[in-house]
Image 1 (tube, one colour):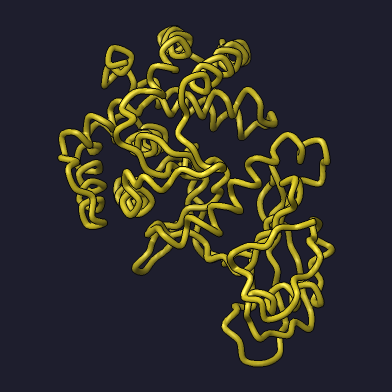
Image 2 (cartoon, one colour; image 1 turned 180 degrees about the vertical axis):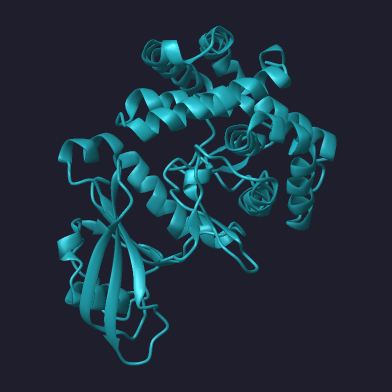
Length: 363
């Protein structure tokens, strides 16, 4: 049984929930888009996989259509993993991403793909999203890093996530919460285990100073997560170059992969992006001006009572987001050669930023 999303315009009955690319037929696409209120008839479809899909499957759908309608001829469909065991393990993130597009994205100014249709099973194991295809935008490269202008555009887009719902007391939902109490201790325990795995795998590729620093972080993590809870906003959680698409025009950066959305200190997203995406020397020269650009955009979205110095201090404090996400991702994700290079680049850049800002002494 599937649940009805807010994108359902009620024009026709919703079709059966599909969870495989081959089920994205002309008949199903027609029914789905008509149920969302679009007068469309899909006559043929071509499908191609997009990306590697560790947690699920993404498919570019090229449609031949009849009639006048507002739907573009190409969409991207997101579907669950073909592995039933993995579906059960990550069902919560499927729910989070569908809920983000349905409930939260329309209230924000961050650039994301437009949602055209969604469906989610009651156990969250099966879902489908039909999203705007953002090609020919170019995906960022976490290993190569980015330049200052790309960083500026990215943090200004990030302010569009944080600013419109800044400290909104109505934000918290059963799928998006602030981590509290035992939850913070659980994150710290998971990170301790992940850190041991990470240091064991990459021991010979990390210098002694980085190994020592990474080993010390889990003991500080629960206190860090619980601190500064008077300032909160939606967090992407994994706002990094591989999850950003760069283009031209009035909205040059778009963010994808909204599976890790939660509530927390906004500076964590900013710190994670700049500390992992910029080479340390480049970050040191430009991070203040980039945080100032983020802060100015926050003010443009109506944020008050958050002076620049407080924003800067939150940015410095938020630096533990880098190793938190990097180490857990490396420890429990699929092992690949590119993944190894990416996680090492992110970890070493994060360590440099944490030392620069003496973050462990702040917690």
